[in-house]
Length: 341
Ligand SMILES: NC(=O)c1ccc[n+]([C@@H]2O[C@H](COP(=O)([O-])OP(=O)(O)OC[C@H]3O[C@@H](n4cnc5c(N)ncnc54)[C@H](O)[C@@H]3O)[C@@H](O)[C@H]2O)c1
Image (cartoon, rainbow, N blue to C red):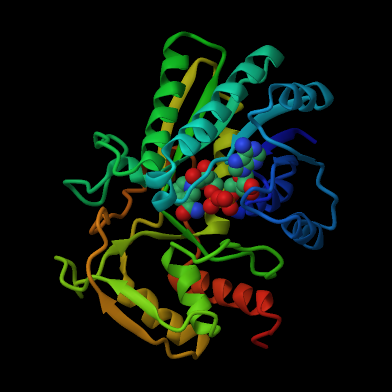
């Protein structure tokens, strides 16, 4: 079995990608420092796959640990998820974000080069587009100035990959620009584990549904959108996981140096109110929400043009918003110690 290192593999998207890698016949190897995840994710992975996934506990900024992992495992590729991702916190603690998100990529690239590992999939974000002038947003759309230090780290990391490839380094890399990942594995053994008060809509919705939060605030209902609330492209995390498998497999046939980037979304936008209504429908739970002021820095509407990834990687999202919210809700029930059935 070909081994793929997944940095941040105990996290939300990494753990689901590990499942998808197994399904495609790869052996995932995890490195995670559990700064934003719990060991229960690795246990959940075992419950789903029946397999013990090798897991190195540590920081992927640690040159010696990274060297050890590459020495102990003949890797055919790497998927680099490890990063801090809280937009709000990044505006308070920019150095923390620049240090972790950028340095971990630099250490990884040097280690890959030293060990002759060429294939890399990098977690980027639609945040690099800011508020696009045209929708749906295509990969050819120029990136805008980042709204936050977090967003800037994604932009800088993309530039680092591009510069490496221009320098003719032995690197074949793909940046996947995720839109809004939601949902959980259908087994409810793994899912999103927000630490503290969630800053993303769906965990807030499910926690409100479960009574953990008193009410939900909708930030602004007077935008130029069908119902006045912000529009996002919500992508099921298992669809997103599958996109990583397609990307790492695609890289096997690419001769280095190679770099390209793809949108990963459904191609469809949904408003905040649509998410709330769909959640109420799938969960049978009415949600209490109030409308608050607009949140500074929020993009009004964004959704992906997915033609490039559909065509070049042969990938299309399979799950609907309903599927994703049902899986998020079942995961929440599992976390809260209940079951919907
Ligand atoms: N979830 C989203 O909405 C979203 C959207 C766009 C892009 N992304 C990007 O996708 C990637 C994964 O996101 P996620 O939602 O799974 O986040 P997550 O926080 O659940 O997962 C990241 C994992 O990386 C680990 N980690 C962080 N720094 C580390 C380090 N230096 N060494 C080892 N482990 C480290 C954390 O403990 C965590 O388990 C991140 O790069 C994030 O920026 C996420």
